[in-house]
Image (tube, one colour):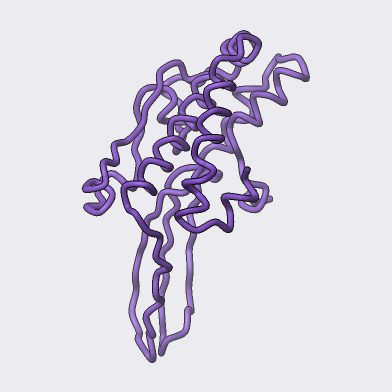
Length: 190
């Protein structure tokens, strides 16, 4: 399904939506999933976290909440309570279903056009909500060329949680706990 959706247009995504929703329902209804994930990797509200990891414990933020286009399409930040691996899985399922609804409400997918920056000089900043949380990019341009860039990713915050969710755990629980953080291997800095 992931491969079918990755390169799909609006009609292709609509064709896969029913199968995706069925899979989400099966995952959420699986009793072993609830028993296995509901007891591990609990993260309290006093620990710094980002994105779905933060929203799965009853709070957090989402860079999309201020976007007027998404608001017009019916976007609302999804939140779950519990702060454990099960709450994170359920929140991600909620967000997948919501994404399907937003795509259907939009009625089309348009590829953004990149503006020609020519010989612009200056500084800029952008925030975008990724599947893992908010990423922030700050750039400095000189004559149309990037001379300085600084990228903050959700993994930068959530990687600090690995020790918290794995300490004194059995190997299987520790691996499930780390997987529930959805850390990007491309963002881990050594």
